[in-house]
Length: 136
Image (cartoon, rainbow, N blue to C red; front, side, top):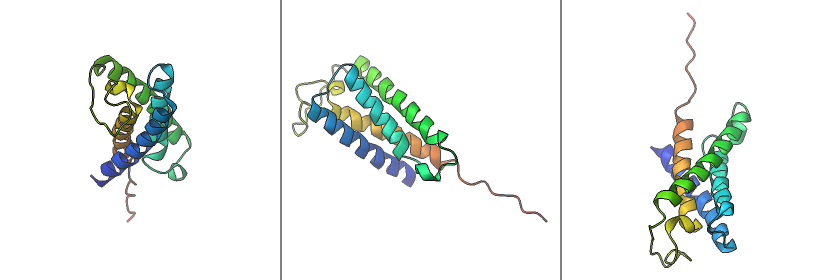
């Protein structure tokens, strides 16, 4: 349970940081916004779970990042398809009142980071070291 909370925290921080920067840059829709959300997934794939230097190979974090990019783009596509009419009236977040949820990077990017971060932490927690059989 603790690892999932760490994944929620790490993913949320990464998503909030990238979402804030995208919001400040005015990236709210279009292909560039999908790429930003893909970058959120890739960054979460690198940061969450086992650290890169503790991995057995460098392929593992690379695959988590590539899969995370796909998750970010896929969740963005699904959010635009199914949540385009949802408005979250939070005045503290710029653009949240005027735009739908998929067009507010400060809300959607942390959501993507939280979801994928919890998944990566849960996935890495299950591996563990296998016990070696004792020789007698």
